[in-house]
Amino acid sequence: MTLDASASLPHYFDHLRPILKAYGDEAILWTESSLVEGLAQMAGIPVRRGTPLRPSPSPLLVASYHDAARSLGRSLILLEHGAGQTYQGVESPSYAGGPLWERARLILSPGPHSARAWRAAYPEKAIVELGGSPRLDLYAKAKRRRASPAPAEKAVGFAWHWNAYWVCPETAGTWGFWLDAIDGLAKDSGHEVLVHAHPRAQAEMAGLWAPRGIEFVSTFEEMLERCWLLCADNTSVMYEWAALDRPVLCLDHPGYRRDVEHGLRFWGHRPGLSTVAPENLARRVEEAWADPPEAKALRCGAVEEAYGGFFDGKALGRALRALEGVWV
View 1 (tube, rainbow, N blue to C red):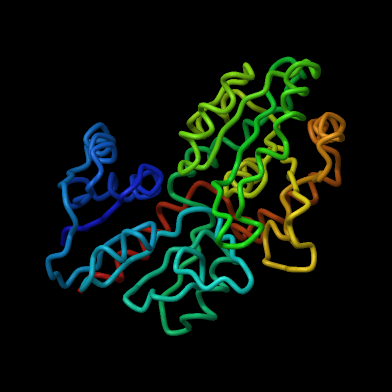
View 2: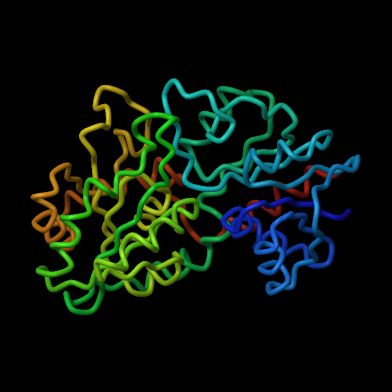
């Protein structure tokens, strides 16, 4: 039976792509985005412009609620994108355990934190922990080739959440708080500094850093190739980085509420050392770069909570086996 999928944005397609490639000609991607259409064509994935509104007994594979909501009448398979961060008191279908997923027949979760939220909200549904994400399998397989670089060999990377300030304080973009400190780091530390951002913030980010002489990097792959340490406010990339056994520095903000426990990043399973003071950024970068035992312990606990500790490059296989039980 043909696997229908829908992706409205490139990062949603990025998560779906390994599954669609595995299905070959038995998969069809639906999209209204010319960019996503072009990416699918380059990957050799059959693609059609539009929204799959037609009735069908088979479920539709999506990586976001945005795409689920545009396909009324279809049962759904959700491949959750990201590390599964949740937010206390936030009722949104965009986060694990959120409302409006009654049509889901299968939820493919990155790991324990996300899966617990889904099971609490939908105890009758099939929830499968993938131990990562199919898109990260190749990186996970290369994990053992990690080597600590000499200081001149790798850059310091910065990554930012998009400015979803209306959700809660912890989802606001915080780059403005760190601008001058990063500018100083780039000029005085001896490290090359690169910047990356959530896909929804990339247009803004690209124009922000160029006047400061700091390079913006659009892809996760290039950040992995060029950076050793990742500094980030609140993004799934920091958990993916940690799962690949590389150091992370968590950039806190005075507006983050220390008395609210969301889980994962806030606050029980931070993936590395942290700082809330721009004036201390250079010192904390050097401490995180050295990857001390404290940082490694934080990283290990965070990866266990986000991915179950078995980030082994086999998430695609687990996803495909789960999909076998869905067809009617």
